[in-house]
Length: 314
Ligand SMILES: Nc1ncnc2c1ncn2[C@@H]1O[C@H](COP(=O)(O)OP(=O)(O)OP(=O)(O)O)[C@@H](O)[C@H]1O
Image 1 (cartoon, protein in one colour):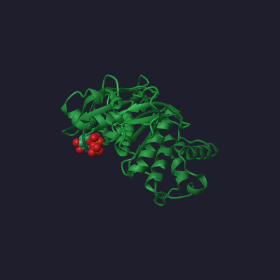
Image 2 (tube, helix red, strand yellow):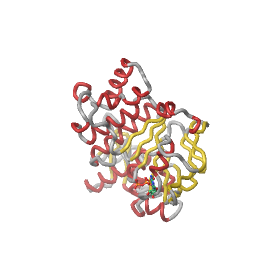
Image 3 (tube, rainbow, N blue to C red):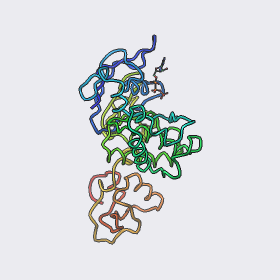
Image 4 (tube, rainbow, N blue to C red):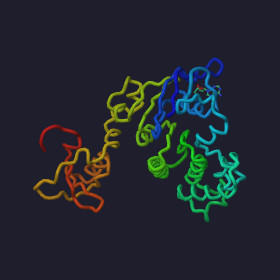
């Protein structure tokens, strides 16, 4: 668990972070969002002591981070950033092995770990191990950056706009993979982004910052449904909030049992979001969809009225 207690950071006369308190539970995916310059990156970098806080206390598993040795921080906290920070004259394999080497692991263990991580991030050893960063696409470089951050098997991962420079399709696929990876590996992740859709997709805990302070924090759905003030509401997209909420809710949430009137022609997967269902209805110009399981067998149906949450019968 990471705990920030009344944390402030001042740079000369600028207060970048102003007495914030935040608790991130073990295994939680926490996203920090907010306007440019609101103190997100500073908050993140105080957790691994790249920046020293001015006031307050930061604890990891109840211990003040100032009591940790540098080596322990390195081992326990991985860090990935937008520009990847890969060393240009080092191969992919060498870049990934950076922290284990600093921790003086034996060579055989480092080699085995690099191989394991490349497989985990979908990078073929034969193709990529010997390449240099400038021979990689943006998405491949980000994968290497994430692999490097995971190298010493840290329990905490700090990520600062890691997918910021990617095209939307690569970005979405890396978001899904990261979510999946986190569920499998059980890491605690603190993730900075200025992209609200990215934050809503990834977060268990959404933290909205403004001018160095936390305006609101909570589960994305509860923040969406009940924004603390106009600033949070507008950052969440104002009237667009309905679509954002629909993107977070699965079709199964509003599905009805199969009726007797025959199965609808157009289908939607039970794991799809209500937003995707709405899109299919608009595109196909239908008001009813058959909801199908993984084997494409109809298990229920979704009507437009149910989708929008209207009360009463269809
Ligand atoms: N090393 C520094 N020296 C002086 N001021 C700094 C320093 N680092 C950050 N700041 C200031 O602290 C404030 C918060 O910066 P920070 O980088 O944490 O914001 P951010 O929310 O991550 O912004 P962005 O989304 O634009 O990256 C800004 O006003 C910034 O100018």
